[in-house]
Image (cartoon, rainbow, N blue to C red; front, side, top):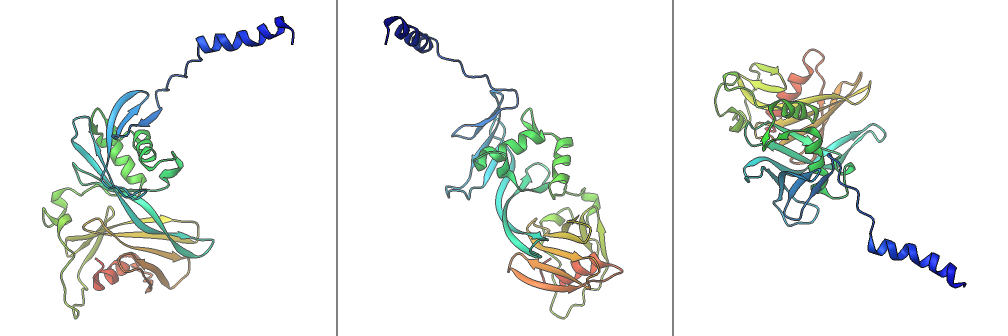
Length: 268
């Protein structure tokens, strides 16, 4: 190789070594999470995601502000998702999120589409939702986030028969009880004789199927129930014992009679 040509080849490499290409600065929406759980957005500190379990891929997380005040808890949970292709329920994992200040709760699903690690993926979900602002949970964004993710805001105390309604067990009853008392559904809450016994969400899967998710007063998922247009029964999966049952579909009051069945069977 000619000496002059060799010089032309080496010179750019030597200049590159002396002046390495600078990394592109993080954009204002770039989310990163350090090993100790500090979440930064565009290089600015935002909040903490503290791991509460050492089991790989099965961790719960606490969301804290920079003063380490707890804002929310993310609990890894299991549930079922109805798939119309197979006409069946498939077990899925999701995060049940409860906000510390007001007890509002919801579910976070499909989070792994956001990032390759669970902690970062969940952090991105919260950042995009803008629920944490200036070290606090923003009430307006919280309500939007909860309603968009199969959740509920805690009702005002004046709407319940007891200030502790959301912490009590379901209505106590003996096997012979008819439980034919007044059942009222309001704003996603299930009332029996003016006492909250659970909550629910209702969602249309497509034109022919709808999915109802039922939760206890302690915010644990009780059942996932589907109904096909024209069918005379609900198809239910009870989460605690994984029983698959069919419940008669009452044309006049379908949801009330479904919840009354779950109450009688002590799921609510």
